[in-house]
Length: 166
Image (tube, rainbow, N blue to C red; front, side):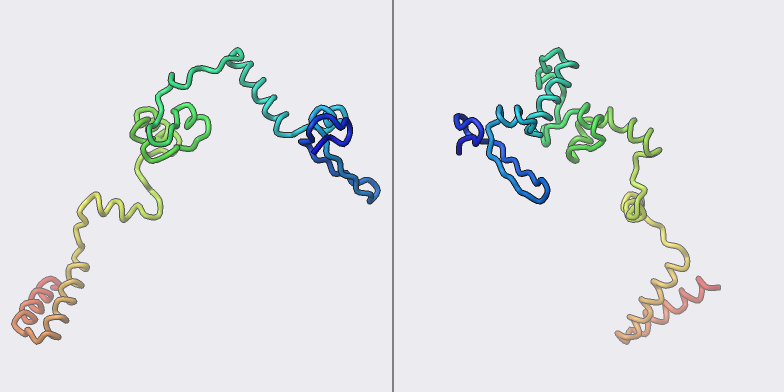
């Protein structure tokens, strides 16, 4: 489709304006759109971003291979530090030396303390049952022994429970 203003270039911008309830639509090339005051938002952002980066790097970006990268997701430590988002689980192994001091400073700890932390601790450490838990376990075994009509075992369990409760 050709530009409706100059009729020479291909149209790449669609403009729709509503003035006093009257709808007007134009298909314009980028040059005519700029002359009329319409700009492509994405190209403007791209130009501004390029200028912004150019001011930092002197219009030459550093080589991509200079920074250490995670082999799984390709993240660098500077990207993680800038965004605050770790790319993948492997980033903790790759950048652990740099990340853990930051995590400790921000969160005060480097171990999980969320809603599942009790389960995590129980897996890490063997949970020693309390006296009440042992008695409850023995009572369950006693009920099973009576149900199976193993009265000798039931008598042993009964005596053990009485000894623990005394």
